Length: 90
Image (cartoon, rainbow, N blue to C red):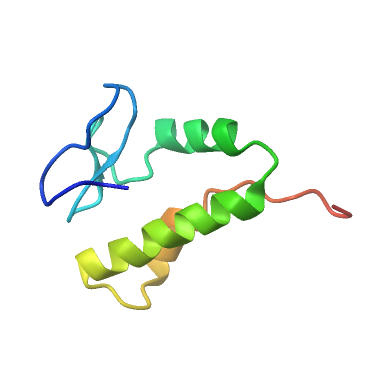
């Protein structure tokens, strides 16, 4: 997860890591998770949607603390609303 307040985490320039406490992308300055990061996460986690959900849930919990937005539906949509739906029967 992100480093100290207002800092960009170490790593590759195309990593699209969040910068706290605002939870904006350190690479493209969009709300995190930005579109490139979403694509990276889907590729990284593949079919392991449960682990991806655990990771995003931990990020959401941190973002709620940082952004003081307890129970915010918009943050839930931001962190989980973009996930593709599973096909029925799976």
